[in-house]
Length: 275
Ligand code: MF3
Ligand code: CO
Ligand code: CO
Image (cartoon, rainbow, N blue to C red; front, side, top):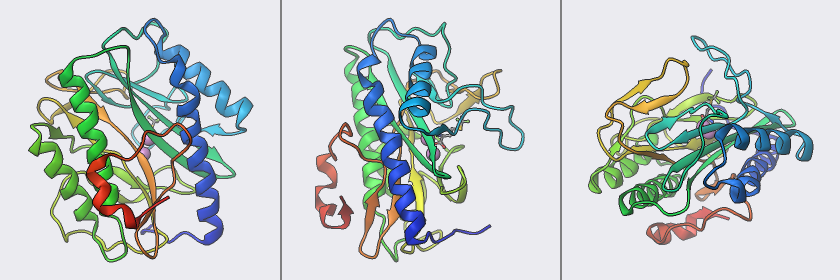
């Protein structure tokens, strides 16, 4: 399968799925506090997706080739966990933790995939800076998206900002095309060279979801077969949006009332970013 161009009908369904994914993050925000377990966060999100939104949680039993079925409804990646952290009643959040909550809903057959970082109480200046720079990396990647640009422009912008601030880019996981399938072509690398890779065309939909480490880029997989951690156990952060290539630039599909505002660093690109 190559990169598909979504029809207007599919795009409308992706707007709905994207907003719903983001609204799960809005819903769970007040619960992300010291003393709550990641298992409880998963249970609350599951019930909200199924009973309130009428959505299917895409991660539950998701089993790409070579993986055991994913056992929970969301991913909760705490501190040195990079991605795919498996929620657990025994993992209790404490003051100073940073945690990524990654939500993917299926609504009317289409996927909405988005994640944010949460800070539990107060944390260190370094951890806050990692979360902020990673947020800017995602938005600088989004700001590259327009017809005629290349996939490599996105990765290059992210890599430059991450490494320029003394952080490193995880190589083994990337953004992805998305639609009726959870993961489609293309692979959206978070590092690379401007002008390389496929040319972006209106109607393409993919995620941008940089994983940025405070220490070295290397990762390992835990014995649960899912959770990815930094090899040096340094902190890691990730943010994710789903975007549509439009005739004039980019539309971000995973926004809702509780989405944090765009960072000042992308102000020069405002004209081409919707909404
Ligand atoms: N939501 C993740 C992504 O951004 C994928 C999670 S797969 C799971 O691509 F099975 F771990 F949930
Ligand atoms: Co994704
Ligand atoms: Co995701």
